[in-house]
Image 1 (cartoon, rainbow over the protein chains, first blue to last red):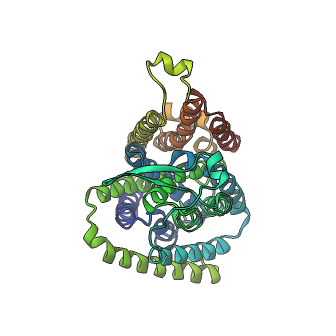
Image 2: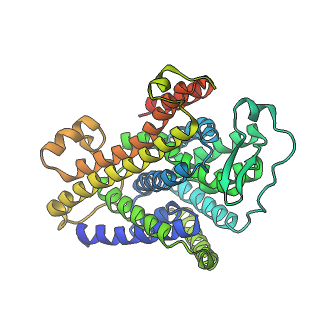
Image 3: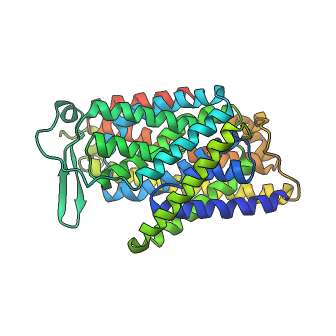
Length: 278
Length: 130
């Protein structure tokens, strides 16, 4: 397989990953690393670097639209980025010391968590009662536009959310994914923020979190232009197509299928990790 | 909220909604610009090396001209495609970092010093590790 053929196939693979990721809301990053390592037999360090790049591209592209609509809670994002960037840098350092087999097994487990969580989202949290003093001091309580007018919400358990975000950032730096699933746990379940706000704010933070660790990957030579070029362009094209053809009716069965694919990939990553063939 | 000098020169108060519009445009243009540069570098790369065979199975690490911005820049002027792709990727990575810088300036204009300090810390943490 020549470089030209390899690049075209990689572009198409990334396009499909980006399309599915955007249609299901699970993000394309989670399938990119298994695609690169299991199918194309790329060393996992290169795969992580490539995935980080694609994560920055898709999250920045999507965040641009959400931010202008006023749904994203920028203050909350900025505050939690303290936690995620510190975690991401720690994770990136850890990645250079851990054996590839351990990274693969850990990746498999995070994939399983992400797939399961996509089904286990609780009802939209109700935010009532009195605001906590910390969320008031940090001016985190906010509102967002809905068809029925502005909806106000309160942010709970700021400290708990901050710690969870630190872990999410570390996983992101270690495995080269956006770890959107963990960010959403922190914001939905711990801080009790409405879905729309938590999803868009998580997406807003992913770019900065990945940028924090990408410098370390670049310095260590893990970012390869020949891999990043087709993957970045493919994922962006896929995500753009996905945002254009978003039809609510079909996403449920698609999400089920995509989660199934992720579970199979997770098993494969763990198996290869245990057998030391990755 | 008091009006700052910088915002008064703009004719009105600088508010969160203004910051949202600026950040939104910045993110979109950054991604667009980087895609164009990466695509251009990709075309040069495929024209020059498209017929060769890729080797990614064993990790070797990238040479210096793929890791250090100054060396990348020099290699681009020699007509190399891969360093041009890397430069495009640097623009991409710089986009969210520039977003923090803009937020920092925005919070200063809003006189929200708590958030100006928080954003400055995030910015420093990222730049120190680059």
